[in-house]
Image (cartoon, rainbow, N blue to C red; front, top):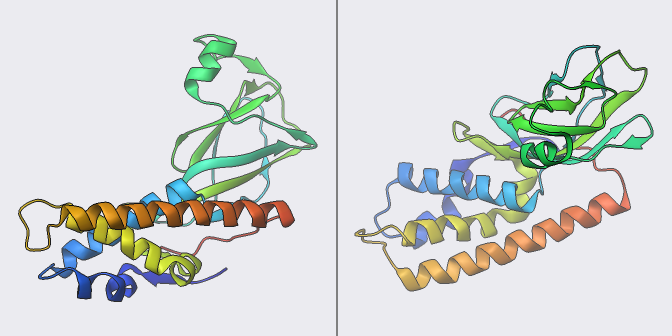
Length: 214
């Protein structure tokens, strides 16, 4: 997959059906729908270039494009070993409240910022095994574009999500609670279908997706 699509490209799926909606308002609803779609479906995925583990360095920047963030680490593998992806809460329960200061051989990964991952515990020595990650991406709120593949395959679904948000806005000419509920249902159904499609693609073969510049 390569290329990007502007949020304005989604206008035909939204503006003709939402009376008197300003373009800036429609664009924001589309952006928010794209973010929600990507976060929940994990459809937009990337294999990160292998990361070299360095002694005494726990945090590593991820090579993702400006305007995108990591919504979820899907898989983590150090050499031939799969590493669990954990949360701060689960690490505290497992290792104790000082887990950030513990040292040793990396046994888990955690993502605490949108483009930074941390290996736990802090590596005592460099390793000759690279860390390989598969992540799900999402556009940031400052973005103006999204993956062209997301647009080509799911523009109508994302249009449903944007229209649900707009119809749910109170005291506007396009306010319509019944329509908001209907389009929200269709949007969530489409998210579910996209998640199944992404998981099937991953089960068939390694999915390599370089992120477009957003």
